[in-house]
Image 1 (spheres, one colour):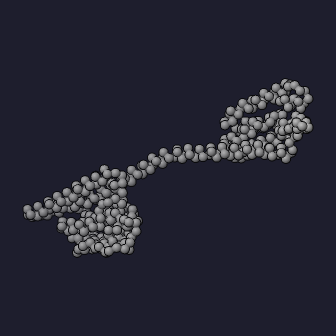
Image 2: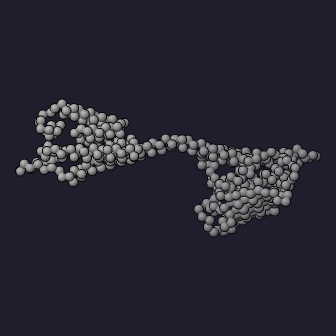
Length: 391
């Protein structure tokens, strides 16, 4: 205000100077609300600079917050207005008499007043506006990053909840499949044996005792597998993972021999090469598919022959073929859950394989192909080991 008063030649402050001082202080006071009212404060202070002999410092300080609070189009429009106000303020300053120009210096030796050149004024104006714009872009970038972090945090909780639900659902489905595959097989055998004993007429005490022993053996095996499954569940979440230890290819011979000992007409061919290198997921899936299809064949075609062929090698993968005759119009002795075929396909899909079922000239045919996966990460060559093949 002193420079303006001296420029008018009065040398003393007037009422106009007091009004200008009040307006300048009011604008500076509104800077505390620059975050909420960035755009109105920037435009108002720029207009005041254009119509009154005041500088554009208030507008330059408020401009960076416009980039945070408004869109880029509004921010750049405000930048143009502030740049115009800054140019007017600088032009107004250099238009005063030399002794009263703010951007000037006096040589002490000669007393000459040195005024900033037009080029220097342009540099100063561009530097002031550029610094305000740079600060605004930096603040806008930080604000955008903070919003992104907040949005990510807000989405993380629902995502974690959904992931937890999916994990629990997968665990329930896996448990249901294990229960079906491990226990339902023996329960089906018990039902078949009891049904055979029920319809058998004229059975002597020896035959009844043998049938009772078979029922007891199947029940004991079911209880043992149920206990093993419960122990596995108690061991932790990873215990039922597809690659967890369990039934192996070596157990196929025992599964088929057990069916024969119970009087089932089962012919089989099992040939395994590089069996020790097979991954637990592959061996478990193979065993469960053969077990489930054998159970289905015994339920739907009791007393009929069942042909089982299994070939496994690192080069060709695992090929499973189970064939049994169809009995038209005959209902299964034991009602099933209807999920056996679905479970076999799910097991095959877990290891990248397929299961196909079809009827071929009066025969029910199941064919499964499982690609080879090694427990050591690669299917290297190894010695052949063939399981006992029985007919």
